[in-house]
Image 1: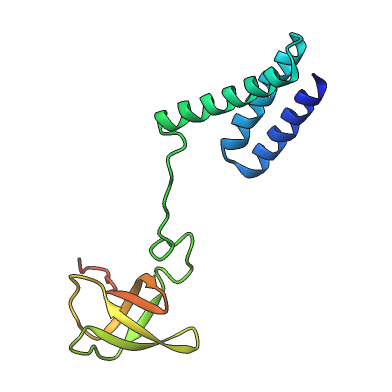
Image 2 (image 1 turned 180 degrees about the horizontal axis):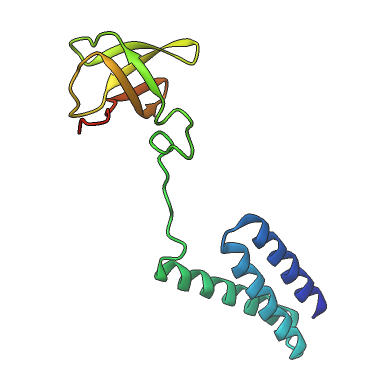
Length: 144
C-alpha cells in the first residue's frame, strides 16, 4: 500500500514540475491502487483499479476540454519568436511582393503580408516562415 502512495507522491512532484494534468491523473490512479491495496485486493485488481481511475480521469478531462491541445504558431507568436514586432527598412518591393532586407547582421528574404500595400519604408515583422520574414507596414502615430 505504501509503495502506491509513494509513487503517487512522486507523480505529484513531477506534476508540479511539468505543469500538465497527465501526471495528476497518474497520481490519482496510483492513489486508487493504494486504496485497493489497503482494502486487501489482489495485486492484479490493484493494477486494474489504478488503470481504470487514470483512464477515466483522462476521458473526463478530454470531454470537458481541459486537455484540449493548444496549438501555438511560433512563427506568429512574439512570446516564442523574438523577431516578431521588430522593425526593418525596405528599400523596394519586387512585382512579386518580395524584398531583401538587412536584419540582425544579414540579408533576409522578405515578403509582404497579405492585403498590405507594397510601399518602401519601415516595416514590422509580422511572421517568420522558415527563413523568410513576413512584413507589414509600420503604423505611425496619427496614421491608422
